[in-house]
Amino acid sequence: MAHSYDVLVIGAGPAGSTTAKLAADAGLATLLVDKARFPRHKTCASWINRLAFERFPYLRGHEAELIDSAFHGVTFLDEQLHRRATWSERRPSGYLSLRSKFDNGLKNIALRAGADFREGSGLAALEQTDGRVEIRLENGEHFAGRVLIGADGANSRVAALSGLRQGWSENEAVLCANEDLSYPGAEIARRYSERPPLLVGLRFDGLTGYGWIFPKRDYICVGIGGRLRPGERIQELYNKFFQAAQARDLLPGELAPQKPYYALDPAGAVNKGRPLVRGRVVLVGDAGGFVSGSTGEGIYPAMASARLVVELIQSGFGRGRLEEELGRFETLWRPRLGHYLRDLPGGEKRQQTVDHMGLIFRSRLICGLAARAFLYGEPPGLGSLARALWS
Ligand SMILES: Cc1cc2nc3c(=O)[nH]c(=O)nc-3n(C[C@H](O)[C@H](O)[C@H](O)COP(=O)(O)OP(=O)(O)OC[C@H]3O[C@@H](n4cnc5c(N)ncnc54)[C@H](O)[C@@H]3O)c2cc1C
Image (cartoon, rainbow, N blue to C red; front, side, top):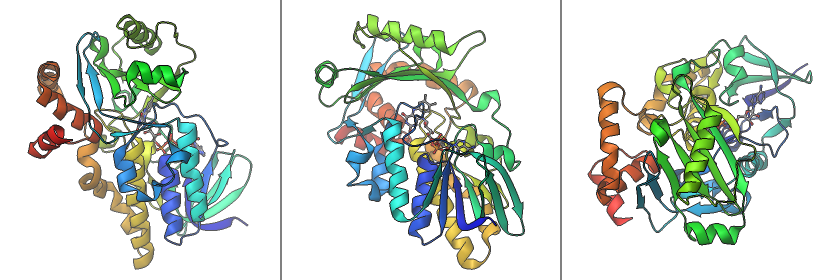
């Protein structure tokens, strides 16, 4: 007979481990499942928004287990990496890590809260019957739960097996290349400063997207992501960005691309209105497309979507109306996260935004507003302006 839980969580990335931690804290019997063995690689630049630490205070005190270093503000570069504009702030704007480390730390926090964990075997089958969800793992183990949370990333099996969605269409995801290049920490501090910003090449070479250089403690993370034009290849774009960055002395000359990883990022996909809930199955994090449409940042939104679903599970169990409460997830994410996840506008408005990007390099004020929009998803306005000036 299948072992029973209140909550089954598939995927132990930021979305899954946050779901498991909060569900276990609420006293729910929770099983967290991941097909990988931890610590595991995840293709990601691993910039963790400060909001994650502000809004999930239980992470504080665990910094050594989760992160490598802090960054302060952002340096924008233009399409050819010629012009630069920097906005910086005194306190950390966020943190940098390796996802193997960050995700292993989050998973351990969930286990310490009381969640059970199965690793090394993926979800193979899923069935919803009579108020239960039953699953079978690739190793043959069976489990049953009152609710199942699909937190299994951009290529979600839960989405496919539950009938919610088979993959993403072309306009729902961007393609990315990324790698962390090992480099001496003292040299990184000398080159990029002790309090380095993120370096962001906006619309590099005309791409609808950007290239990035994130100076970490002992690594320099280099990557690029966006919507490719016909005939364009992400591998070539990555090499071009790398060489251009070296030519502008943004990267050490002796470095060379080693083994970049390529991955899909469902940037802004949640805005396309695909269903997120079916009966007792709910998609969170990348599985649901909870990624910023303008920056591709998804760690904090994954955690925020997890918190919302746990609140609904609790109220659903409390009122004896689980499916009804879960159904509210389809719309409730908008007031909480909608502005943060929005896409850059389309059509003419997009062109206007692109035209205005040049102002970032001419006006410190515009640079500050753009930086706060980029880092914190803040819409431009008086509040953002004040924070840009006095941070
Ligand atoms: C190149 C790149 C760079 C990025 N950089 C950043 C960044 O700097 N900052 C940021 O905030 N976001 C970034 N993102 C986005 C970020 O990586 C994701 O939004 C985030 O990882 C989403 O977390 P998640 O928990 O939903 O999914 P994931 O982190 O993908 O975790 C999903 C988990 O599910 C497991 N899994 C998958 N299938 C199964 C299965 N069948 N059974 C069991 N387990 C399964 C996987 O092993 C994995 O552990 C980047 C994305 C890319 C592609």
